[in-house]
Amino acid sequence: MKINSITAWLEKLPLTRPYSIAYKTITDTEIVFLEIRLENGLIGTGASNPFAEVVGESPSETLAHLRSGFLDCFIGKDILIWNQLLDEAARHYQHLPGTLAAIDIALHDLFGQFLGIGVADIYGKKMDGLPTSVTIGIKDSAQMLEEARGYFDLGFRILKVKTGRDVEADIERVARLWENFSGKMIIRVDANQGYDLGGLEKFLQATRSMDIELIEQPLAAGADRALSNLPWEDRKQLVADESLLDASSSLSLAELPHRYGVFNIKLMKAGGIREAKDIALIARHAGISLFWGCNDESRVSISAALHAAYSCSNTRFLDLDGSFDLSKDLVEGGFLLREGCMYLSDQPGLGLTPQKG
Image 1 (cartoon, rainbow, N blue to C red):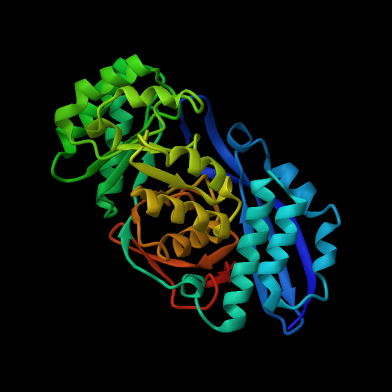
Image 2: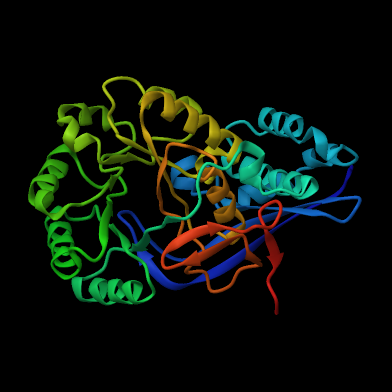
């Protein structure tokens, strides 16, 4: 069955609640959508929202790449050679993970629909139904606690708190959360490269009794060799995020002694599902657990990440809340959310349908 049309466009979607991280405040998100249509009418949908600060590519650049004319060579090609098409795209769009992610996700969705199976089943589904964390940005303690109570009432049981601007203030905020939700909610921390080694050690010492589950990317990418000075008991709860982009960087981070006990895989960093699977395989052989993260994303790419996560035996953690705070989306379906746990749709491909209204 042959491809007969390809369309790409950009949507700017406000967030229902702006939030702050260590280096900026985010009020809206730009998402690039890609549709690849077969001659029988099936449509594969991809979406991309890369962070230029992390991967050097912005959504507007992604759109320009997708509209550059290269994808015209896919027209008339059979969906059965989708992997070959991904190879061609990877050669043409080297080091452009946002562009590759949109193409990769759309082709996975289309091929799964063509076969009549879910994307996870292309690789073999290993699990279903893990809880996801929800994210609270940097804000004062009163606002943080109010937001946390709201998430608890909605059934979520894992909080991820953004930190990294002021270690003393971070310790106080985490302590307030622990006082109010100890035994009720699991607490994770994302420092977004905001600490130096001394600040991290101070944070670890002050919060040791608070049972923090994970700490994402405490030091700047490129400075994380200093983590080797910490005992393994501390390092095993650290998560590589900005330091981990693709399979090549995962090879370096998998060297002994491990600087991190967990890898944060994002499709927007890796360039889609296929490269994410390569990272996951390297991590599995190194004995490193997987944490699947996201940016502010459509259900399209969140669903793709969930399918990838559930096809990997070393997946342990989800942080796939990126579509929850969008003021609107272009699709429905993809996954089911029950009491904070995410379940795959039983529909083929990514299981998406256009949003009604």
